[in-house]
Image 1 (cartoon, rainbow, N blue to C red):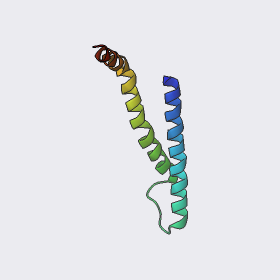
Image 2 (cartoon, rainbow, N blue to C red):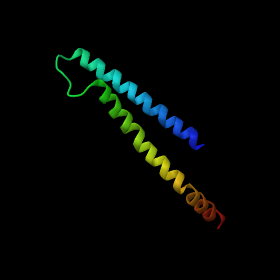
Image 3 (cartoon, rainbow, N blue to C red):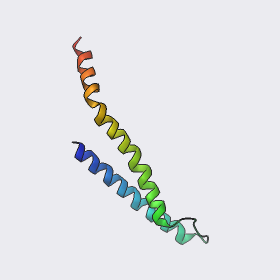
Length: 78
């Protein structure tokens, strides 16, 4: 299951990267001013802000899921 979650996070980060790259290229093509960064960096920024917070949440869940599930089961028993 963890492998599937990491694969989904990777796909989301790649989709975010591509969306940011396309958006930056589209805006750069219509604007008559220069950006301070290349479109590659705008896409990478979105990939980072998509992937890292989700990865942190998943890692915390994987670390503490045993204790959380045990607590839920014990509370439901009595």
